[in-house]
Amino acid sequence: MQGRDHFARARVTALIQTLALGAAFLVGIVWYPLAVAAKASPSDGARAPDFALKSTDGHNLRLSEYRGDVVVLAFWASWCGPCRATLAGLNTLRSESASGEIEVLGISLDDDATRAGSIANSLGLKYPTLVDSGQVVGRLYDVRKLPYTLLLDRDGIVRAEWTAASPPQDELARQIEEISK
Image 1 (cartoon, rainbow, N blue to C red):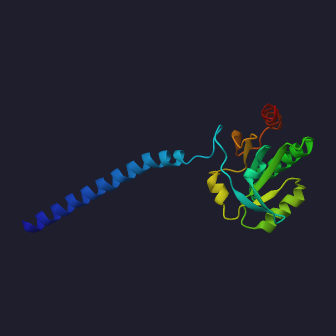
Image 2: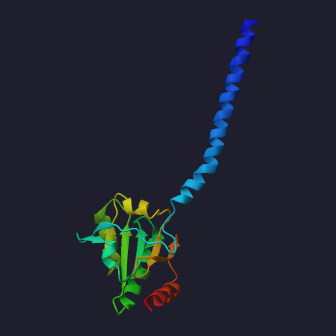
Image 3: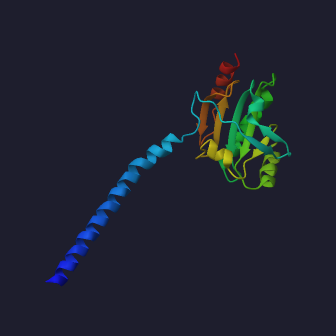
């Protein structure tokens, strides 16, 4: 009789442990999306976090140095095909800005600065390409999909963002014009 009692207790213990594990799993399913949402990327109306990165030409650049200018941040990587179209479109935007009040900063999330530089050169980019090899700035901005583009006003406030697609040129130009007034 005692042998059966021992197995019954073991089954009850296993059942309790299974229920506890299941409850912890359910709590995790509910909690995780809330935790991820709390650490979201800078949204419209939020101040863009400051950062400093080295450009492919060796200069250290800080975002706060561009306060007073309208800034477009473009996060990209060498393996991202749509990123190249975004970078080329922003190159056109930069060359059309005669007043010089629009600054574009390309931020490569590649580990290899040489590769980022060669892609920037092959595309003929006329704006700085910054290298975030440790993806510290990518995590700061919570970049999840590329290309990721942000439009910042003169005070460094995020006015628009585009994820996983190039910003439509007419929409971007319209928003820049609104900000520049």
